[in-house]
Length: 162
Image (cartoon, rainbow, N blue to C red; front, top):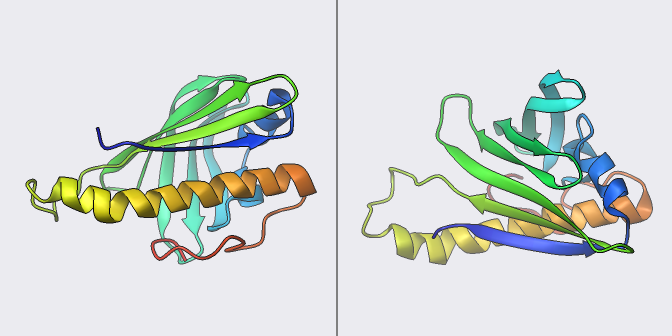
């Protein structure tokens, strides 16, 4: 019910997209709000856990829960001892181009009363996460097009991460 998705069309093959989004430290290449991205645990070229440090110093940990080569993966993301959001990365192969879709099911904050949560979600959380996903996907497209890391805040800053 409270999930947010965004997708982008990239004029590259699914192989090329998968090679990038499954590589160690990949967020450092294309995530416009990422300061650093470290692998914490991997096995047989599969990322199991990594650390994402945003431009403002906020640190999140991503645990990869489902890894399907050329299709995508699912992760749990959150602070070290905090609640986690569910995220799904999908590759949709269309031959000469590829769609990349990210879906987030954000955790429900206990700071917001349950009765007000739907209103808060649609008025605040949803627009901010939609904007965030758009920037991340545009960063992916930028990197795939220019073959160089996306500059910080390339598509505008974000109040939660910069």
